[in-house]
Image (cartoon, rainbow, N blue to C red; front, side):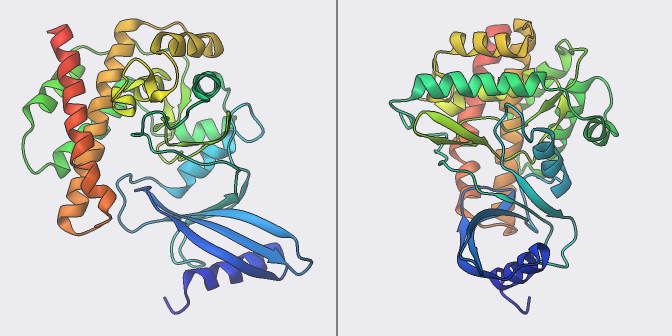
Length: 334
């Protein structure tokens, strides 16, 4: 690339906005493994400042999704009760910045590590009520027909099998050895399918602590929709409830509020009754899906495709935790 990314961006955004801009800052945000993310501050010739976020596709990514998937998911929740960034632009080719990208306005707030206890203190109750309420809003949202059709064009029934097949394929392709506990979990999932809901919902795909912004006692944004798809909303609930996100206090999912209270809030907002056996299936699925992601991370690091230290960490500690979660669920049912 003959020009640096910051220079390419400034040229692109000035042309896009038909205005002359100065670049005040261009800072990469590390931590994600699916997109390169940058916080950008520009000023126009009148001195008006704009704060932007650029999401750039990577050559090597743990989560292989099209940029359009994330863009459409954000589009579905613009001006809704689900706080998401305001979208500005999306490009699917690499002619402007060297890779497909999405641009949006920056939201106030900060994201916390999903593995740090007490990180939301002293606002756990307020944030917990919002966290589970917003997830209920996602589950009940009526999706625009055009967006719905785009997401449903390759969807097959049963919907649970779509997702399980997808992640088992990742495990089979990226594993360097056989993991007996994981294989037992996969067999159990196929042999004991959940009830599929009649109504399809937009599923965030990675709804958890760490993927939302907060400012003191208020959630200001739900981020990282690159795994969004149509499916059973219990998938999101099972993922968000996973003990991995509150390993040192498993009774408070996401280190927020009590599990029972969280589920009751979700039920009230979503207006969906929960079949407990189906929810347990999705919680086991969450652990298997997690293992697929951690195994893929290890493969990326070992092969040298992506030597970001987060991939090494992901293949180590989270994998051990999710194997224990799988074993706990299987012991309750076998």
